[in-house]
Image (tube, rainbow, N blue to C red):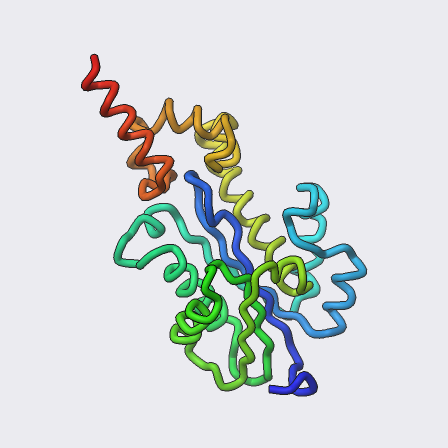
Length: 226
């Protein structure tokens, strides 16, 4: 597919791939070149480089001006399900779902994905195997695509916004002490230590994560020592 043939750009990115609490979100944002230029002028960039307030302002504009967008929310129980494969395989499946929902096959689309795997070639092949219709698509998977492509930056903003929306639901239910959900957050670790057993069946923890397994091992050891 030549550059002249590319009419639309579909950027895809994730948010919440690594935390021990809450969902992972995959987002796709379909735009044309004019909208790409407009997004760039408006300050659309990787969500990690934006304040929460600025991000939420841009979310509204992205949703209004994009041709369309799609989201997949993947909750901890599905992430922990071994039948879904490893996280790279699960992410390929969910990204393909976003693409399949957006792509009606009527126009040529350049799909740019922020690749979650070290092995770009193998992961791209896995992704392609899960897409219903490849005939009108040019699939490009890259590292740091959220920094290098405006459409992927827009998708990263949509994904991060949805992830925070889901975390706000958890904070409303369990209190702000839940923190960001990431293992690097001391508030999250404290919440996990205090609530892991009590809330283990609530579906909020990724129990296949090393953070969870290590904590459970520590608790078992403490019981043995008592």
